Length: 339
Image 1 (cartoon, rainbow, N blue to C red):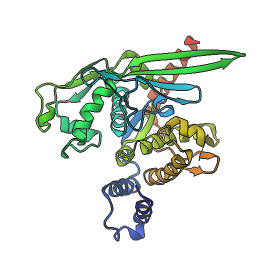
Image 2: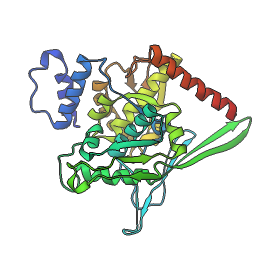
Image 3: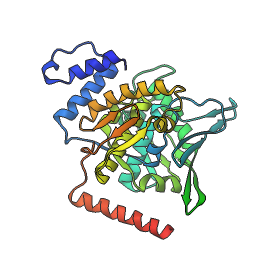
Image 4: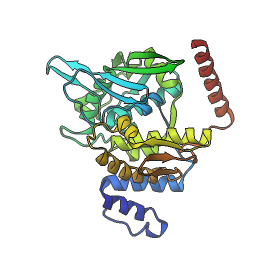
């Protein structure tokens, strides 16, 4: 999105200008519609989730190319990906861009909702695409339909590794977890005739390790915001990070500061120049503010400052809160036993 489009959006969401706006780009219009909906119906949120580890270390924004391994580090946590190797083309196929992120949101949300490793995608490919906020009608080599099919296989068959380094009492230790996301899957969709339903329901079976990792303490997000931001991997990553850090800031009662170089390592390694990355983040935060207006985020020469603020998704209450507390207690108990 260009600075002019951002200025248009800032103007558009003001009540006095709402009827005077015209000629916005599709991306700007989608953000405007989401911002308007969220302003008018703040309680009509759609809850989605993402694993904490995949917020701390994100997937590649662009294709890393024909290399055997790719990694990204945030503090003492490193995410590595060993991609699917295509023998026919003799190339490594990485999951990258916005589509794997949208698919991840869906997987984590479904796993948290059903509490099962087998996730059913339905009998209709177009219907499943719409769940992700994708367009089943566009065509061509770069159509959402073709890219989703390709990225699903890249993601499910890749090997994901998390490695964490600990320092305690003058000693250093490493812990790691290697896992495949979906070692089993059955997709009955007719990709060439996507409008037709299959006789059978497609499903994926998450690995036990990946299921445990993503459901241990998922971060709640607003699906309406994710759909509005879906054209940019950086927008999705920053929105998820801000939601996560806002929760931490609110819980601890203090501001969370992320230095520019740390943020660059965490989600901007594709940007060679830190200066260019900073400019991109500044523009992206303006977009995120439209769909998360209650956030309190400042950008300075030292980095990004995330202050205590209302959450994007209201905290759970009543029976839902009791269930959440029970899950948290179970997680704490398992951690104590592990120690």
